[in-house]
Length: 181
Image 1 (tube, rainbow, N blue to C red):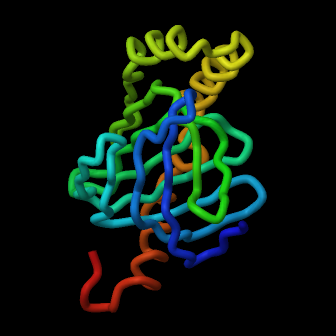
Image 2 (tube, rainbow, N blue to C red; image 1 turned 180 degrees about the horizontal axis):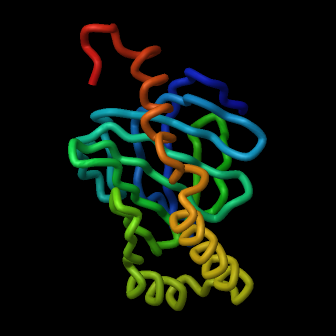
């Protein structure tokens, strides 16, 4: 299945063992090309693998890549744009959802572009328990370095104004002029 701008989609995150990890019940495609899909959402229901659910609190714009092993969520807060980045497989789309495999390692980026790598212990535990191949481990570490370089050079999703530009397009299309978020 192909997606196109303004499609409403569902997003599924899995773990390496093919178990469902998390579902975002609703997102809107803002842009899609041969390299990436950019989606936006606001107050979206997120369902965990155990059935518990919660709603996102802030608006966000997310980049999924077809040739990179990470995705980037730009979170819009009153104090600035924060980013949460997942080391993850390139995405695919089928009749059910946009899907990717989450590989535990995350990078949290502040508005000043300082960043922290998170969940190294979880990654180390899962790479043993799920028997990640050596070739996959090398890819994930290489892509973690590439992601950090994008943050440091403020390119791609980290370019100044990128999140705001996509979110404005989303607002203009999805919300009435007097009910913008």
